[in-house]
Structures are given as structure tokens and as C-alpha cells.
Amino acid sequence: MKRKPIYVEIPIQAEMDKLWEATQNPELHEQWDLRFSKIYYLPKKEGKPQEFSYQTKIGPFQVEGWGKSVGSFQGKDDSRTSSLHFGTDQTISPIREGRGYWKYIPDGESITFLTEYNYQTSFGRLGAFVDRFLFRPVMGWGTALSFDVLKRWMEKGESPQHQYTRFLSFWMISFLFLFIWMYHGAVPKLFFMDEAELQMVQTILPFGEESIRSVVRVIGWAEVLFGLLFVFMGRKKPLFIVQLILFPILTLAAIWGDPSVLSHPFSPLTFNLTLILLSWFGLKLGSDIPTAKSCKRKR
Image (cartoon, rainbow, N blue to C red; front, side, top):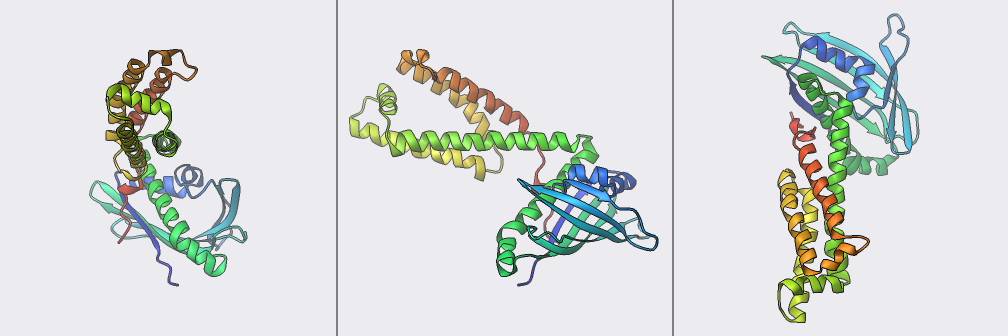
């Protein structure tokens, strides 16, 4: 099975020497590149390529590998190229050995920074199958996200650690709302049809029992679909704005329908105030976070 190389390209407005240092210095490189947790240069041997070792943590697993900077080239137009040979002997690693390069091409006020690399996989045909449909797309996405973090670091001065903290916080909030909307849409409305849900709708719409049940089912499906938008919708700003409008309305409607809920242990007042605050945080965090979409992924 032919393995398609991973290609990522992004324009960065920075000085060549500054970008070169951020990508070639191990202490700086490991700060922005998701693919590596630690990078250590080994003592340079005369007449030999610069060798290094690296560590990559994936959840509870840690993979250690080796690498060689097999060469660099500077063109007459001040473009630069750095080639790499890497691999690992650990059996748990999905990557066995690979090669790639980084290229720095001046383009007016910016530098086109790009990479292309490929590798051989472990675990035979099973490893090749998992790599093609899971691991390789994740590696490509991680490389592109890292390149955008590097770009923002060079252009805006925001540290990679701060960027990744905002990125992780934003997606934790997004997945939390995915769970909340799907749970409250499916469990008390579609699966069990809770009596409190029926009473709440009945105070607003004086329909018959069967009609009320149909309305609750529609609301349940609407909540499930709205929750899914937090994963499949690209721009999530409109979702958070809708919530900032919707949650206060839902809070007032719940209290109006049954004022006694204010004395309940889990009052909709405190619950919805929490959701309003999280919506505001999501709106602010999502206004400018790193994204893999800013990179070109094909030649």
C-alpha cells in the first residue's frame, strides 16, 4: 500500500534567522511542536550528522526515538532546507522509521514555511490500515496545528504554552456543551419523557397530553442536534451567542412555570448561571485560537 506523504505549508511574517532558531533549537522546537514532548541534541561527532533523541507522550504511553539532521542547504535566494531522518526501536510506536524536510522560502515580507515527510509503520497490514485512516490524519492535523502555533508565536509574540492552554480550554467547553445538550435532549425527553419536562411545556402550551409529548420529543431532538453543532460546526461563535440569549430565557421560564424550583438542591438558577458564564468564556476563548485550517495541506 503506497503511503501518501504528509505535507503542511504556512506563510509566516518573521525574520529568517528568528524562524530558523525557533525550529532548529531543540529547547524552542519542543515548545510549539505537538509531535514532540522533549528533544535532546546528542554530542556532535566530527564528520557525522547532528544526532538527537526525542520523547513523545500520548496519554499514558511514552515513545522514545532517534533522529539525524542529515543536511541543510541555503540557496542563492536565501531559501533554506533542513533534512531529517528519524525512527524508533520501541515496539509500541506506530512509526518505525521515516524521512522528511523543512523548507524556508522568502516571499516578500513573509516566509513560506513548509514540511513534507513520510514514514514506515509498525504492526504489518494492521498498522498500515490504522495509519491510513487514523494515525496519519491525526499526525497531519497535529503538524498543521503546530505550524499555526509557531506562526502566532513569531508574529504576535504569544507563547505556545498560552496558545495551547486557550485551545484546550475552548475545546473542553465545547465538548461539555455537546454532552449537556445531548444528555438533556435525549435522557429526560426522548428516552424517559420525564414528568417535569411535560409540566414545564404544559404551562406554556395548553395542549393535550399526546400533543405535549410530541412537542417534548421535538425539543429533545432539537437539543441533540444543537449539541452536535459544537463538534461539526466550524465557527462556534454563533452557538455561544445563541446560548447567551437562550439560557436567561430558559431560566426565567423555569422559574415562572414553577417558582418552587428556586428551593431545590440543583436549582435551574444556579445551573443556568454556570452555563451562561461558560458560554461567555467559550465566546472569548474561541475568538482567536490556533487552528490547523490556516495551513495548506497539499502542494
